[in-house]
Amino acid sequence: MDRRSFLLGAAGAAALPLAAPATAQGARLLKFIPQADVAVVDPIVTTAYVTRHHGFLIYDTLYGVDNDFRPQPQMAEGHVVEDGGRRVTITLRQGLKFHDGEKVRARDAVASVKRWAARDAMGQAIMANLDELVAEDDRRLTFRLKKPFALLIDALAKPASPVCFIMPERIANSDPNTPIRDNIGSGPFRFAANERVPGSLVVYEKFADYTPRSGGTPEFTSGPKAANFDRVEWHVIPDAATAAGALQSGEMDWWEQPTADLLPRLSRMRNVVVEQYDRTGLMGLCRFNHLHPPFNNPAIRRALLGAVNQADYMTAVIGTDQSMWRDGVGFFPPGTPFASEAGLDVLTAPRDYEKVKRDLAAAGYRGEKVVLIAASDFPSLNALAQVCHDMLQKSGMNVDYVSTDWGSVVTRRANRNPPDQGGWSIFLTFFTGLDFFSPAGHLGLRGNGANAWFGWPTMPKLEELRQAWFDAPDLPAQQKIAAEIQEEGFREVPYLPVGQYFQPWSYRSNLTGVLKGLPMFWNVSKA
Image (cartoon, rainbow, N blue to C red; front, side, top):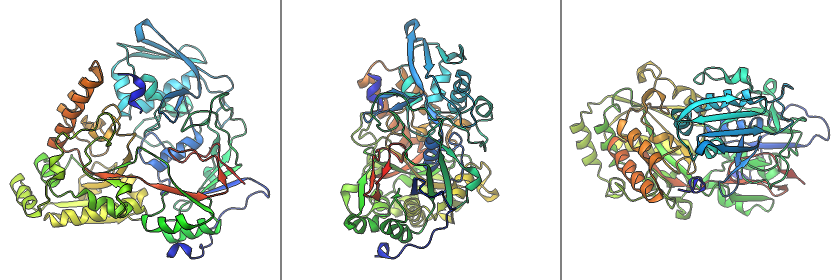
């Protein structure tokens, strides 16, 4: 397979005053409303998108991707492939500096790749095939592989979480499972940690010594990164009406995730742009904790497949306009090379809660408490959680609905203790379609136990099929294995797929240069 094919009413109210530190008169300032607060600032230990977006501001990557998902050199000047594909040497660009003034060296990149690879599905595949990763000198790092790995550069370039961000060696050498607190990158902006107000404000300042790559066109995460603002402020505004009013009045410049009920009003505002920004969509999922009852039992997980009505989930998130969502969705995004109908009847057959109750009883469910952790300050996730709560209750399950902020969900979902000791049973989230494009980077379909994504399923057959997918000789063979992976997914049920939706963002019409794909703050200007 060609490696490139892989990555193929209230709103009108006046905005409430938003506290912000004083800025120098004449400073170029962008005010952004993120999807949630940045509870965890380490973009390697969490897959939370708000942390990934934070990472793209302050870190840079060896490679980016263009609008066709093709890898393009970013911090890298380029690379050379030798020894029949078993040796790949990457050369860094001249003039790269970290925010603390230190030069970026190859050993920083080596340590960063290793830390990232310990947490990332594709990174783990690279490491399983790696003999050695070394810094040849200050500018060259070399991968010595057991056999050719065609997706190496794609993996280093991918914008899916976690991203292979480059950080100083002393920081990158830290435990990949323990969050770092020192955010030193080499990206176009630096993190003003001293101005952070948890739950309210996150601040970034332009890094004067950033050297953009020369040539190319800014697309997605590739091309020259021109920082046109002296300061970028993220204002956390959980109340949608307040956010919409702040955007309408011009107090805010950009709102990442406007709620479905406000989209029609925003679309009618003369000075506001509403547009789709990610053509791969967002894949909703209901994730189980596989370590503890009741969801350590695959038969109980399977029984709940019969309760899922994806249309209910998607309508709650984005509204009744069916052009904005899809149901009948499996583990891979519809319309992409590895999507199939395999096993989908478990989601598309008529829903029958009485049968679900019988199936749960036959599977051994005896009324164990199900702790559902829900993000009350994250509108789309809150909507997913409420539908899930209703679904579980209709199925006869004993649900403890814990409504809290997204930051607390992100923290708690990493807790492996039993649910009654600070752990959890189930939570709702989403990934971009790009994250779930193929078995290579699909975190939700990993079954590698303690090293798996939150929920920690142990599913040897899924791991065996994933390796077979990597070893397959061509696209048709990979598609056949992907269908088998989906069928196995419906047998083992690492999570419940709850549909795909397309989330617009909105920004003031005086912003130009806004790149699509995810919130990126380089190239943007304000008239």
